[in-house]
Image (cartoon, rainbow, N blue to C red; front, top):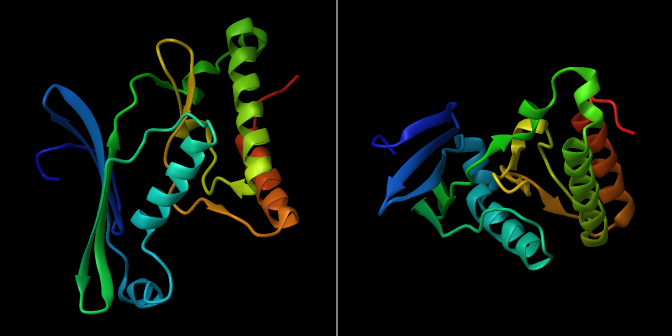
Length: 181
C-alpha cells in the first residue's frame, strides 16, 4: 500500500494505484471500526461483498473491473482489515465531460447517457442498486465505453420495490445539475 499512489484515504478506506509487471491495479484497504468488525460476525466484509457483487454484475454484462484478489485479516472471529484488488481502468471520469450546457447535447455525450440508461436497466433486472452513483464513479475509456467503478456497499435486493426506490434515489443523485433529454 505504501508503495502505491494514493488515490483516496480516510480513516476506514485507503485506495492506491499500483504498477506491477507493466500493468496498473487498484488496491483498496478497508479498516472497519470495532463496532463494524463486530457486525461483520453476522455479515461479510465490505471487500467480500464488493467481490461478490462485482462478479455478479460482470456475469450480467456490466462493464466493471473484475476483482483479482480479496483478502481478509482476522482477529479471532472478527474480520479486521480486508483488501480488494482489481485492474485500473484507463480513461476519464464521466464528470469531466460536462462543461457548457451546449456540450450536453453532443452525440458522444448522448451516447454516454444511453450507456448509463442501459446500466440502470440491467440493475433493474438484477434488483440491484449502486451505493454511490456519482459522475466520478464512472470511467469513460479511450474507446468511449462506460465503466462503473467503486461498487463498495452496493447490493442486490429481494424485493423489486426496494431496489427500485434505491435506484431512483441514485438516478436523481447522479443527474443533479445535469440536464437529460
